[in-house]
Image 1 (spheres, one colour):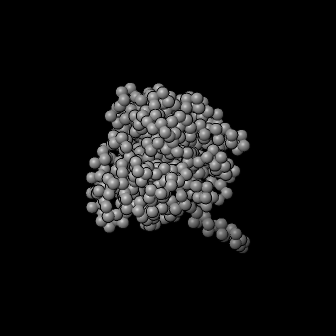
Image 2 (cartoon, rainbow, N blue to C red; image 1 turned 180 degrees about the vertical axis):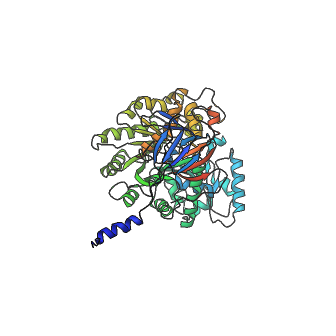
Image 3 (tube, rainbow, N blue to C red; image 1 turned 135 degrees about the horizontal axis):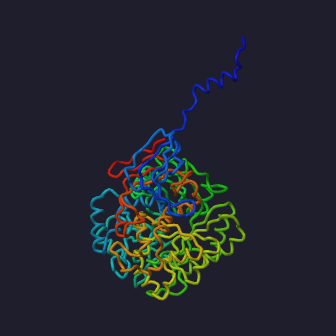
Length: 560
């Protein structure tokens, strides 16, 4: 009698408990739209993906369905789009904005003050009144608001309110008192304390001056951070956003994302850019992190700032501001510091994403890229975040090294009249110049800068193709030549945004080999009028073939 070897027995037993065969899922009867490998729009009627949530096949009309399908779902003729990618957000700020005082819907100073007073009365236990979203330009105020105006409604607690653009704060007197701010407090480098005629701080702190008060604001607890992140994810998913680039990720935010990933609560994909060289090294060590949690989290690189924002006159310009000729903006970094930090990141393969809004700031970044590109060869994908006001003479430079302009279409409609006042009509030839950047060989990635603007990619697409706001103004579009095609706009919020974050081949398109991240929506953005695109209703959101959002239902858990 021949006895089987132990190895044979082991193999036999292993066969008894072998894993079941992978089961493919077919989603049929859909009106599917994606950007394909060639950058063209492709339409399809069915999608197949495997147990890992990776697409194996798309079917066009008339093609036979595969036979070895375990599960099938009827799409009922709905429009299927790739999950939207927002190429520039501040994830935790989205959540905290939803949990604190939101002034973004106020249209006047008096309306804002009424809302602040009600919030303070409704929240007597909060030691500080915190919020964001005010905009003196939207109010038609013609000046910044003051501490005295806050003192009149909330005299008993510190008030600290972030401007809509994240580049200025409004404080009451008690907040300044707790921070030790007085007439003798100097402006920090890269920041400005707005003062009254007597030289006393008026209550407005611009760019790095905000840290003078901000460091005294009580830090959120871990449970507060988890709640804010849950809220941010829900708001993004409700708008059809399945992936984001988180700009300026500190270590504490990274750990919040990791905690969610460890506990199965990570419901979106995050491409993170560290808030500082120190955070970059602590998180990434010797280079960008691997993709974690099945392509849901990665540190790509670092976010740097060259200037501030137009609204607070912090953006740096080549010539003085039209409406305040005494300033050209506030540089936040020297040219030497910029190059040193870009080099430090590039040495270890980190990607750099650099905030530049004014024409001087954009020229500085383009100069730095020109100088460093030859020293750091390979696929660097230099990113300029915002690129709002560019000297027309500099537009061609975006094509030299394939520089990515990471831009936010909604900024154009929010800022267009303010930009005319700040910069002057004669210097707007390269303002929000989406088409010109593409024509010069640069690349685009579209986002929102949420919570500065709503994380609404469909509103962004509508603006990108029309250059008009929600009321259709101005007629014919603001500098309409810079509008892009519908296909380019869709790519900006999907395939091109994935490319900007080194995620192509993983997600961003509904093609074989990429994740089955898709939406069901109620209209076709390639056919609808811009005003109708704005009204797009996201019905369902699927991430890696698992449903994570249904309109009108509570948040669904992430399935393993």
